Image (cartoon, rainbow, N blue to C red):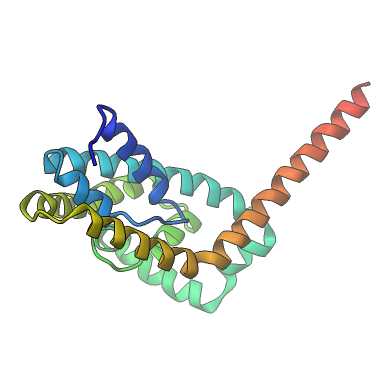
Length: 195
């Protein structure tokens, strides 16, 4: 597959979408990009896209926490226990989870629910993901993995992600839809009153 002159721009936007609460597979994409661009550029652009995604997640989830049903999670014993751990090692744990296959979502969730510094949050994402993407891109540059294998890996990882995250996707979509409907109703009332 031939990359267009906009390949890195498409890659940035893909990484931005792929690293949200609704994850898409990144390793095959990063490896493929590493076969076509210098590893440090792939890492830098991928990490930047991940940081933008992290900020979007921070903003969206902060809004969701305004709902009592969602905010109740902060009252659970599990949350309180994990919060104590997170508060002691927040930065290092986020870098570690961003770099390794350890699920990043619990750390992202804790950062948002505890109002962790957005700057530190983004730096942790950049360092962890950037390092991970550099290694994957370097692997892609060193090992000529056929495109069909990368596409196959992408499809398998995507299917796993959809199955694993289906309930979460439906739940978040429902909450966002309700919020949008509430805002539209409020605007309509305002317009009706002004007429």
